[in-house]
Length: 286
Image (tube, rainbow, N blue to C red; front, side, top):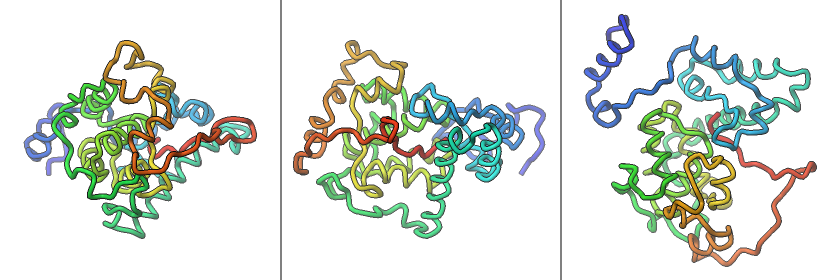
């Protein structure tokens, strides 16, 4: 294949010509630049302490290094080692950042052990439904970002346009697909891998399984308060977006709607750390 190109546009045209099926499926060109030098430049901008404090917010200090790690431009080891040099107290300031790198490594080990079986349900659903109760394919309204649910449509459009989504947006979108629309996680996982620049079967599939509850002890779902809290109302207005009514309830009410075959769950106080902060779920994408 041709290796040298005068311009990026020439490279793009060449790849479209060489891979017409891929271009037909996804012809968007992300603004993210590839290569090790671009990855190293982005690595210099990370702030592990800020990441730990804000990673759940759509405008939080996430690193966006995942595409470079995924394609081998950067290694987990060098990212970890650099993060640890940025503070006089790395155990405290970089702990959460390094913890998430470890999760990525863990998923790779699970993939090495399970192989193609990560496309199968590793455990039964804990939703009160069986795999047969879920649809095999994504419907057209999801594929066309035409669900009528403003946040979900915005996330889908962002996925198509940029090849990237913040981790929390991925979780919300996956939960919507699996639990609100009752579609098999495998359909969503295949869809993400077609568009994500950082998509790899390990992190992608096991994250979808975590949301679905086939690789965790319970399903992940959310409500409108959670969406507003971490989106910064970037896309949404509680009173002006009727499409978000499906999320506008307490967790107990939503659990009864989404998982009617499960026994009612008593309301429990949120688990907290010694400092009184709510324990956070792992991020699967940096």
